[in-house]
Length: 398
Image 1 (cartoon, rainbow, N blue to C red):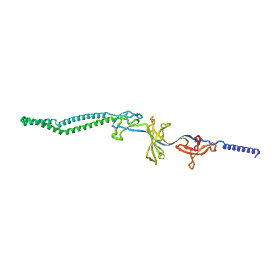
Image 2: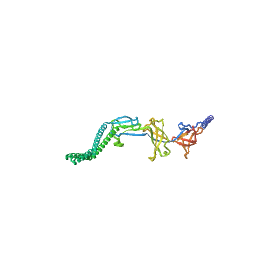
Image 3: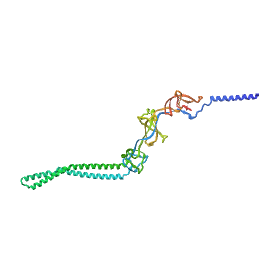
Image 4: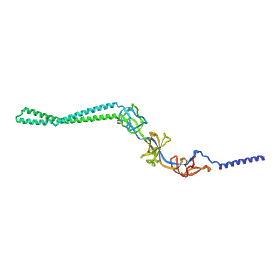
């Protein structure tokens, strides 16, 4: 190797070594690891709530099924789904012609029964007067006077016989009336019973006619309408629960959500606790609710026991509708002015001690492990009691 080539070789080696040195120095003193912003979280201050969620359907506090007391054909429907009705408002009218005819017949029978009763009472009154024998005493005195005159030879036998005959006729008439008195009283009682029956039949016909007009028992919204004009309707008096369902009404000024809470959480749920209600229809809005009922007995399904919880919600604008799916977040604890961090930022060591990776640009790895003390957790966010301060930036696990 010539001297010039040897010099060239050593110069190249020195340049390469210089480059390596400069790279090493820049590595040790220059750039640190860069983290994607999606892996960074900031400690914030706010209200931390511990809650459980009960999912269910929105239901009216007051809901009734409308069924008819009369059989018939629907003639008029006055309301439709979504209408607000008041107590006593006419909802449905059935065909009335046959019932009107029946009512006229019943009233005619009642008039006939009333007339028969009046006749029987008049007959009884006449019989009672005859049974008292108002003519008997007069005939008896006349007969006594005639007998006295006959004894004094002042009245012939024929005259005495005539007076005696009149007296006997009066007695027979009294006896016949007394015998007929029981029959007359029985007839009056019978006609009175007929009047009562006719009156009941007329009242029943009037009620059946009135039942063809179906009215709202409560103020509420028409939730469903299950019939149309011309539909046949069966009476609840005849078929009970199997009678034709006409419609459902619900008072939705106040509604509730009936959901289930796991037995591990239900012990911390209390009547009167506040709840935050969310529904799919209003994704950007929340509704306030209150726990009003906790079932005393749980239901086991798939080896999991849950308890039914009802959360009442004020609904003055009727925005919440029946059967909307709702999540009722029942607030068990609420801590104001708490330090909050996403749940995913917490890491646990082998002894289940929590820590976080605090962003530390001065460190070679760009982060520093910091032990923390935890408060309550909502499942997505965690309260930090010690170890961090507001504004700290934490690196989420990769």
